[in-house]
Length: 235
Image 1 (cartoon, helix red, strand yellow):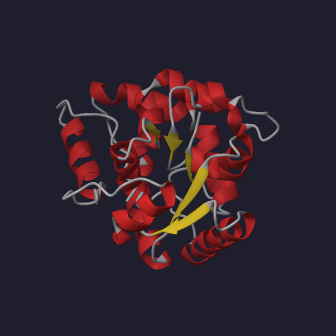
Image 2: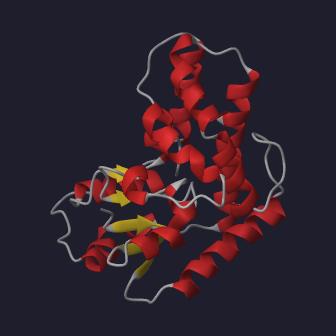
């Protein structure tokens, strides 16, 4: 059963949030990591590409106590209704920096995976991505307001506007006692205060930036080397 729901878009510090929540005892925390690396998990999410499907959240998110990043954060409203006792964390960042990060993700993730010869080690990741591709396309279409082909960078102005609308909508939709608007640069204090737990003594907040890791991982995989998968950059 979920106790913490992440409502922030990808690339808003969600991998840092995953690490932080698990450190604070709210794990396992679901992330796009889990969809890319687990074919069973990908199959659980795939039917949600159809907007008429009523999700069985206990099945989709079985085994997790928290969730951040897409696809879970795309369904923040439905999850907040399904788990009324769960708290919601909306991760945010500067919209222009966010778009630049999303552009890097698309250019070095989906676009590249579709355009280059892949090593055998990437088979599982690509298969899982294809399993959930219709859902990914739905999230891009409805979340970012873009009808551009999968793997193509959406329009900057329209995408930033969609990001700002999402932030405003989440803020307007939930009572302040249930919602934390959080920039991971703020560190442990506001997050721990909101969740009612102690700040880890002498331990820095996990500031993770996977952009470089993703690019290096793709390079190694293209050479046929084995790396830890999945590599989904979310910061």
